[in-house]
Image 1: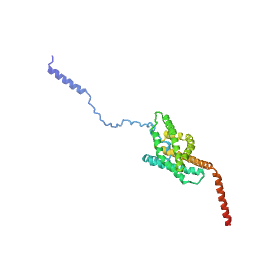
Image 2: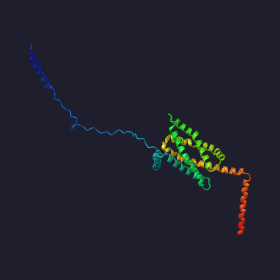
Image 3: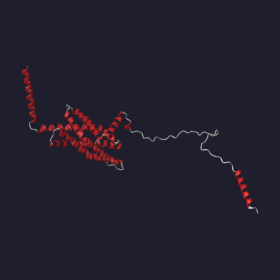
Image 4: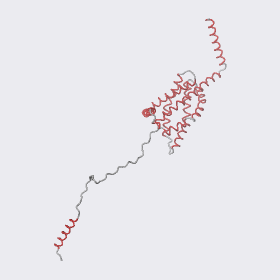
Length: 275
């Protein structure tokens, strides 16, 4: 039996033999060097990726008109009340001048002043109302939301505004309360009927496609034509009232004819004396 000393020496000898048989360990470098036999990877064309940037809306690609609208939007965000009053003055001025030219009469500056006063006082309430519509009646269905806004606007806002417009025009021109009421009953119903042919489509388009700051300038262009119609309708009512007043006074037409005939006779007599 081998002694423990021989067995220990034999184990150490076996361990040395195993270590000598193992291949030397190779250390890997983190830097990959390029060997002459390595082939360069072939660069392929990149796969085209669709653009994720949405195209600009049409109304933002109109050059000078777009810049004008953006300037108006900045003013609207910075000073909304001042911008609304200034816009109303421009709209009512253009509408009244157009209506007076359509009537064929001489230009009446007092009538323009009345229209500007009516527009200036209505500017802030109009803006507040449409801001109210923008922040309310917003449902999960976009169609229901827009339809509700249009319906509420036609039922609530249109009768009140038309009554204010024609009533203020009558009072500022010196009519009595009875005459003002007659003006309202003569003009408001027909104006409401005609507004249903235009403003529901305009209101729906502005709420559906235009940002909040651009709605005023869009409706302003439409309002020039609409206010021209209202001013023309108001002028027709004034002429009808004047005609009715002349007929209601007995002998007024005969008296006017006699006065005109007397004036003509006096002018003829003066001409004969001068001759």
